[in-house]
Image (cartoon, rainbow, N blue to C red; front, side, top):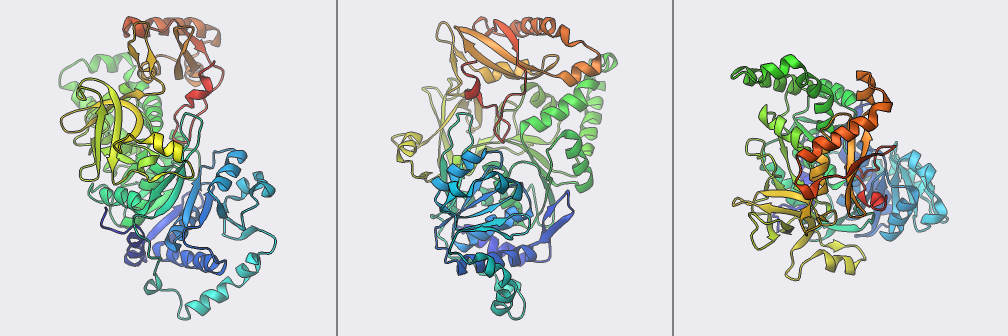
Length: 554
């Protein structure tokens, strides 16, 4: 078990970093120091205590990423209750279901989302608080929360007559083996399960991050991924808040233009991202330069190519603020061409691997040790990995893991919990891959997306899609099996077409040529019979993975 107590990490951090900035809403320019965060937590604790919230009660949290989202989360777990973060992208019916399934008794919510919910469908909720200012939006009949809110300043003065100080920070005694978080998955299979994560699971991620030397006290980060997702929550919030670092919440959709402006102003020391962000920057900023005839000629000249790559790297690093140590990519597989190019120019990035059920980290390599095609070494001393194959080094099999970060199970779902583990206690990841001698993981695809070829060959649609997405005028793609044939569904890059003056009427001819070019690179059993145009972008999870199950019967 991890030695450091999860709750104690933050009790110590709020005291040690009292005067430092903790969280800032970038678009508003407002924020809180660690001391102010601790004082807001104290106010919420008075509310929860007066309402007789019990140890282990569940409290739901759904809304736009912001400073108060973090304060609410931290107030719940340090009180001794269980926090239930819900992705704001879920539709109202899913939010109703998760609130009810988790048996949550209170709710912190964005005003906009509250307007879309129906009170009668979440009848067990005793009180609702706004994430804009913590005012009470709703109380169940018989509750006196709104009156309590009017008395809150007075109650704070009575409890802390000399004013709230760092010496007043004292949180619940919660054993690391206790569940502190119910995280409902948002996978590509269409089913959401409540992952029970303990203080030990979360402390395992946070204390491991301390050994990496990528973010330190007083440094800054920009958060642009959804906090309700395990990846962002761990490394854009829990880690920096434990280390005394300062997090800016973007508060807007992370387009390359908006992100690069924020990077330029904030100059973050560490960047946590999903592949889609770097892929877009590569496609918009770098690929047009590489496609110029003079550049192609220059890159074929020995010695000159290394100088050009160094210039591209400097331009990209400067555009992203200029002082970050590393960009950590997670949440999905990254395009192979983009990975190889960034590695070739020595851009400081790495790709990790994890899942909600591991809170989330399973493997990681420093950018200095990163090998393209891999997603890092399994966390030494914390996690272990095996491949369900008779030769894990060369034969693909399911990746299975165990260790400190692995969940306790799925809430109120014994059947799903039993299915998630092997008979000897290893967690099924559902991913296919191999490992090398150093226990570095190489992912090939998902068990559920694997397609069997005509003679039983394994076909990994994600690998074909990665190649497809690099072809001209393709924004994104999805490979499916239909009538024993492989079909590529393609959403075109209309912006690229418009900028080059290519008519939309030429799309079918272009895609026919793209299909021919792709098939030259494929084994015969992996070749696509055709590319079909898809009218809209594919629907995605918050970590930007396509919801494949929606298109299986297309």
